Length: 453
Image (cartoon, rainbow, N blue to C red):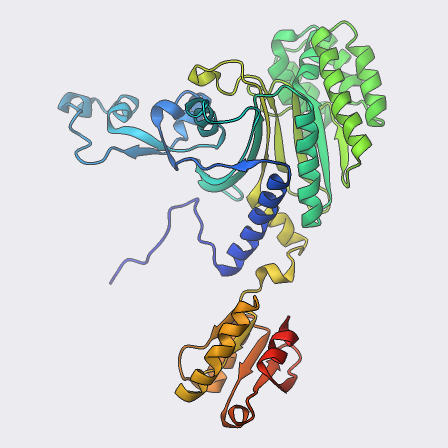
């Protein structure tokens, strides 16, 4: 008996309805990116391990899918090395390539390789799958899509303003109410300086980032466990419990950080972004949130995160400013800012809120019934005419029982069925049936097309 087919854990098949929904998400995001002057690029699924290794930290390196060399991949390995079973050493000889872990490192490599061809500032977007050899669990996959947009080669904060407009536009098109959160790495550095724990910035920010999940008491306990002094924790309380309008919070934090040059710089940058967005006007709320602390080893300026308001889902978009994207490839000093939409989480949000437009998940609009050779010959020109008019049309390929063909239409959710038997052909017309209402009427080819359009 043949083995039952399966797919690797952490990967998924997507059927026609799922693909229609996913394409709606991708097409919406692409259309907005293009609206703001971003250009699409693609990079190979595989990169050299020289490109990938050492860019994500030790844990990230372990999550890279390595690809065995083609042909005799053991030719460079001695029997002694095989006996040693030193996995890391063997990998370097057996594998020269790996599947990309994210879109950022391949983008950095692309910018360096094509620096003489691209126009700075370079506004690119990329929607492609990435792979991580992670332990599969609910909501975490080994293969998933990222939808990134970045601007490199410009320090202007207008780029941050524009990216927030993109976020607002995309979720407005989806009909999803979101809250956009903004903070700045420089403000977090200033806070650590002000409370006298500059060297513990990572521990402080990792702890306060959990405020919503574990509450203030547990955050304080975590800070104590990380060696933060009681005096520093006490100074931190009014900062992380800060509330009010964005302007009120900025004014208060400016006073608290009055002796921190870098902290005040972060406040100034945040105020610029928020003031410009207030003048433009967004459909969704943007909130200055001092507890937001993502990607601290990576981001150097503004940081963003987006959460859906009407269904619990965690972060569905994030990003921020980084100062040295291409430095890892020997081209230092190129600043950038970017965002990434979480396509899989957005898919779940749109499902939970039932926000997919019906036309995006409806395939065929019109099915022609097949009664035989003569009837098919009569219908085929009308089939062609309907397609030219933009109607998604099928001709049932086989002469089958009427019930079977109608069941096919129902199973696929086809809203209209056309049929032409001996009587219709004599009159030069067709019968058009609305599968939703059950209504039938005798129409010409042009009337049929008008009725559906």
